[in-house]
Image (cartoon, rainbow, N blue to C red):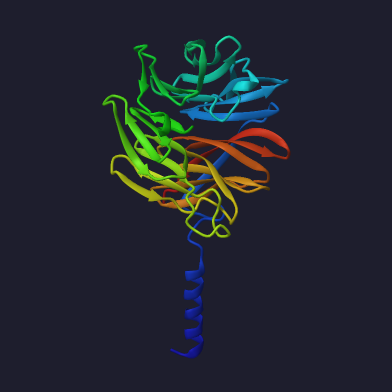
Length: 339
């Protein structure tokens, strides 16, 4: 082999080795991201959730907070709750599963209550209006859960009207809790825990400190591990996204969640198909995803401004989008390219 050919081949090999393995744009051939607007009306949007073709969120219009929905198939927006007290506006206000929407609202007489709305009958109904504080509602199928001010977890069956309490000790909980099917997950003081509703059994998922933002979809549990693993000048403050397969009882780390040093990762969500999250810093926050089948990390929305409050169901991702100094809601349909 002559000297010039050797230099050319060596250079090509070095270039191939130097190519990044993670996705830094829309060049990833295996993933297709089809973005679309959902709502650009109103002055502020918060607390997004999605189930099937229905997206719900907290919406402020004319100085009044309420809950609205959007049908992705019919492409029409509709009201769910016309007045929501501003004290109840937060990241865990509204959730949806199937035809039932749940949220908490403030009442001067009973403090914070849990309410529901049936999309089929177009009917609002109370779930828990007892005195005291009921917060962070979650729903999966017929099961609604919430926490009180002490962190106790209550489970209510919409079909049987039965209510029960999950045996969580005061030192065992934080503010993160989620449900999918028969499994409840939460972050305790020293790790991530789960609970089988039917079997009435609590079980550990991952023992250790510095965990937050837990969520679950079917057999996949996701959370953020913010344990320091590198010097602070090299470590992204948002930590790493950890996934746990309940069926295989196996834990694994996703590719780095942060896009650059000193960026934060948060707003983690998981569906049957993808893991999604927000990632960014002081000047910009973007939305990224991870496909566990192709093992590809990919950008979903990389725009000016802040994209937060992500939620996902199946192959649909929705988020709050603050671009051009205006709040809106956008979505994306994620698909794998078929050769």
